[in-house]
Image (cartoon, rainbow, N blue to C red; front, side):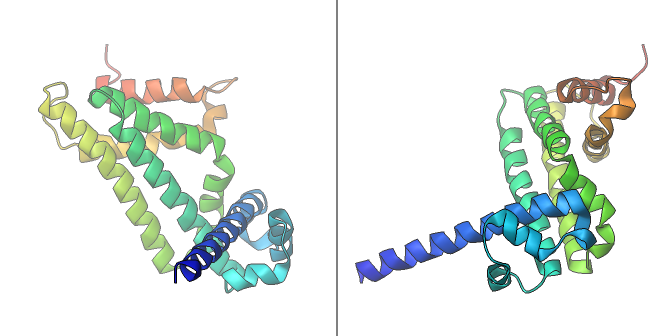
Length: 203
């Protein structure tokens, strides 16, 4: 019985590993070419497998596209929540969470541009999934700001609006070249966004 269990675990890990290899390969191809120009043959080649193997895991290219988005947004949300928990006070937690978000947007701009460029390929369920992810990310920031309010460091306001502003402003990482001739580093952008939202622009 124990031998059967070991074999099952080994097969499961191998299948999960292959699944992730295909997802990661597909993420690269979709990000660089978009949904319509990406070919399953290219994804298979990137993953080092045959085209038929892709269809053992995914029913169609559209199914694979959906799973790529779900995989990477789930991974992002997990890391985002972990970053938001690391810090001695609300300010440090805010810097850690937004720093991670901006770094991911900056380093994975192709993937996030894919979400904008091929958003018409999303069905209602995938759209609702993205709404859910965005809501959970915003709630993470809301909770951090609420901690600052409770500590008397932020004035007593509804934290939802500044949380949404912080999240949306972080998307500037995708267009950093528009922020000056040489753009702005992710760290500089993080500090600027937090400063403007928390301190305002008045002297």
